[in-house]
Image (cartoon, rainbow, N blue to C red; front, top):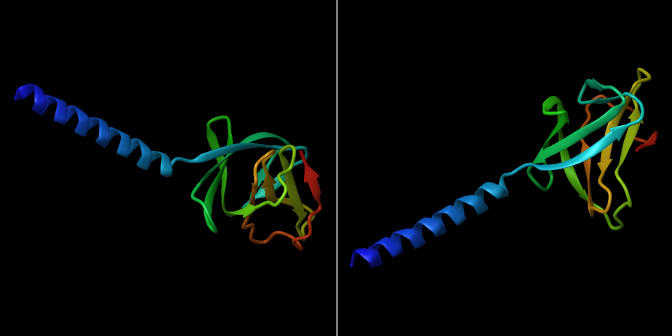
Amino acid sequence: MNAINSQKHLVNGIFLTAALLIAGSAFAATKGSMELLRPANVAGTQLAAGSYTVQWDGTGDQVQLQILKGKKSIASANAHLVKLEHPLSENSVVVVPNNDGSRSVARINFGKKDFALELDNEGAGSGAAAGAAK
């Protein structure tokens, strides 16, 4: 009888562990990368030219985006996922001009992915894409 109870507890423990792992992965952040060839703003924070890790939590209309340099979060913004009909072949960043002459990141495209992230930059320029920086 003890062997049967032990097996039941083991099976229940395995199912509980699997359920927790699945639930935890539903809330795990998703990551990508971006490279800025020239300085640009994200939600009012000036980013220097260089490579960054992009991490976001959530799906659909609203996600919380973090820009990291190494392991340090240097900017955050609200964004939303945009479905793409034709995935791009490589990562790219779309920037828009601001009224003061600076530039803001408006969209981050991830190579071979069927989505992009559009940032909710308040105070960004006209909304027309000024160009893409790899």
